[in-house]
Length: 271
Image (cartoon, rainbow, N blue to C red; front, side):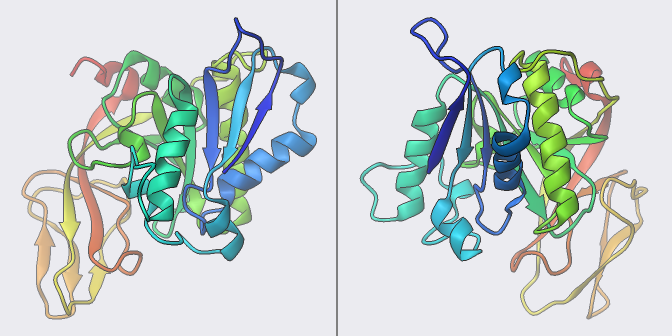
């Protein structure tokens, strides 16, 4: 794990803001955003210290998702584990404790950046609206052991894995995040980010191939199919649903998630 602290740090100004890339080694967009900021970003304008972290350096160097275990399924980790990523999860979370954190990921299912979070608060809503994102998926109660479920953590899925567009989007989101947290001067332009409450994970059936209908974050009316298997089985939404992270070949056992649209994220905080 590589940690770079930018900005003057004193006993009274310990970093309380952090950005994290390369939680998955085959999703380099966040690490590229961190490297770009260190190389050419406005580091001379930093007003308060920030930690910039490249988490799973071993997996990033090898170009693989993980080395021994999926880091993003192992929080808060175990410092005594024999599994490298379990030790790393504990070290990373210890490093970030008490910080407001932006993590970076990439997908095989959607080419536009969007946010993910859990346990929505006014602070998280403010962060999401400050980033150039149209959509934010809320995984409260649906997943566990992931960075998105940790206190103070929000994530950006920056676009397709390995793409230049994802790296550019991650950098734009990093700058906006640093502005809204007062690390950099200036205020980001707020966006009318939509909030989607994820309701269920859709598991793949063994031995089936899937064809998806529609697109992520597009409404599937009640009763219509959002996917069909090669055996003619149709997966239907009982009520209006919006697919999230759906991909026919992105994951061995998971097709994706279905969600409901609750509205603009600032208005969704108290719902």
